[in-house]
Image 1 (cartoon, helix red, strand yellow):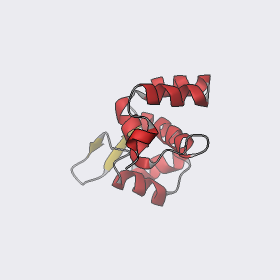
Image 2 (spheres, rainbow, N blue to C red):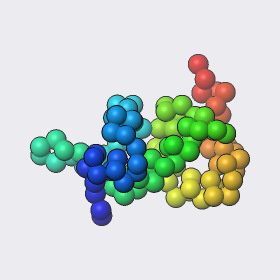
Image 3 (tube, rainbow, N blue to C red):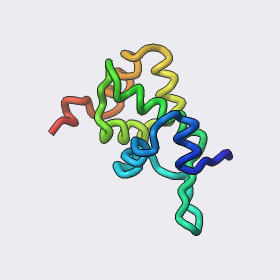
Length: 107
């Protein structure tokens, strides 16, 4: 399995390190392993998660990071990508039919 450090992953996903640090702090993105020196490693699937994360933050979705974290933890990335390929509406309907709707998740 191919693994990347944070800086390698950010270059590959074309996102700022500062943005990625926010995803780590909120535990939306998790490392696959941490070595003995504390260096975190991320999988190639994390690049796919980051792409999907960016999509879910934008129109027409506008999901909050907490919501995105629940979605990424609940569903395999391939399933989400499949529904997104059909349409954005198909992905939204899939997410909401398999968990809390956005209105139920609002405080």
